[in-house]
Length: 346
Image (cartoon, rainbow, N blue to C red; front, side, top):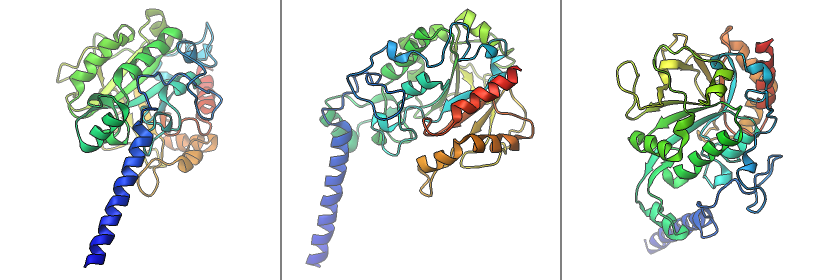
């Protein structure tokens, strides 16, 4: 019995030390979330350092041009819902931002610069907990309140002022780029999210149609000319169809305008029973591993040009206009999107 108690106690100590070590690595004094993650962007790949590029120059879009709309002149005359948007799934979650079991290698800002024009972001409310208190102690920061995280704040979270502020700077620096953001609202954080967007100054860029249900989607060039280059969709706690409730100003309810495929799936079947065509068709294009965690190995396969063609060909003529992926820096997603958009304009 004494041996068992000793063994259990030793295992608990090892577990506690492992957790403390992980938290120290993630939230130690060398990690300062107030430092802008844009410093040290390495667009060519690899890890980022803290003493290279700085904003706003670090947010200049790759392959942009004065007459382009989302990097192609041929996109400009197309309605926004006829252009294919590459989207980053759980864009706040990256190993570059010290998330555990992250969905991406590199931060959201680098994805925007590289050419991604869609972001999936999960809002949450981080509260005091043993792990969160340790994080705060190690990092010398308050880790409570509105954050962008996936399922749990303990696995990683980004502050709204930095994330939304960097998105605003991207739009300022790149006047010919249109971005779609799809928020999953958790922990009844809708009001906090609304005010965070307002505080960031992003509201001046939001496309907000008078009729939030029967939208006549403008062309890319019309959005650029009006400088309303940010489209916000949201679903989750506190928001439902704008046909039956007053949606927050600037927010469109996701499923008023969007149907989607299943994730962890290789078919093009519609998720649920919502088979009615809508203006946007989202292909959720990632496959988790056997533990239901993000998998870079699977992304190597899923993000390959041939795999993207194979899956879209299963859509029976209903070609997606949003493709969401994990590990956005892996594979051929951007070349595939460019090819599809070039063909659509032709």
